[in-house]
Length: 113
Length: 114
Image (cartoon, rainbow over the protein chains, first blue to last red):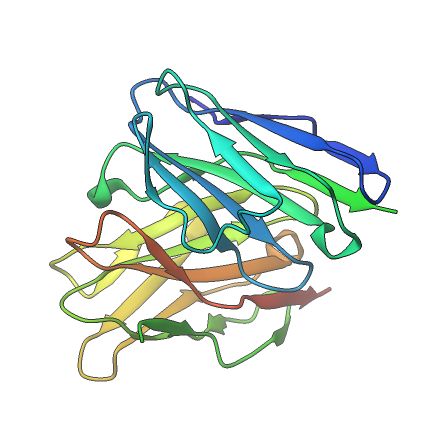
């Protein structure tokens, strides 16, 4: 079964450092999402791509977060500088269309110390 | 505002008993509805979805969900709970025509007691 690949699985970084996460969606899925999930809460959308274009980044803290999907395939989410409040699970998901729902990756657990 | 509500943060059920995890939605139109399960330190796994048709949908691992349009609910059910069903469950709604953006509930932690 096809999967959404994410790396790293776990990341510990110091406050004010830069950190990056990578996501490789299922082949052929045009839509890619980055979600942030704080422990005990539901996922909240950070950014949505359709191919290489950003569809929705209204909840992305743009002063410190950036996301790109240059060739419309894999994607990178960056935080610079990281803050303590950024500690969370960062989930990537992809979709082939509205009818099908999302397929999630296993996530990256970020701890900022 | 569009939203999905899971009124119970925690549900406990004895192994072998039926389980229900509740979900209600406030999303315009005829949303697509989904249930996902999340195990510790993992991503969300798809369980089932309702698009149209029969109000009772069957999904993975013996789970099913009942769609009720008049009550705007989509409750997750299983006839006989297993200890391995213990996990975090999320309900989600997708509003057609909005570019494929989900609205997630806050999650319900299910504990099945041996």
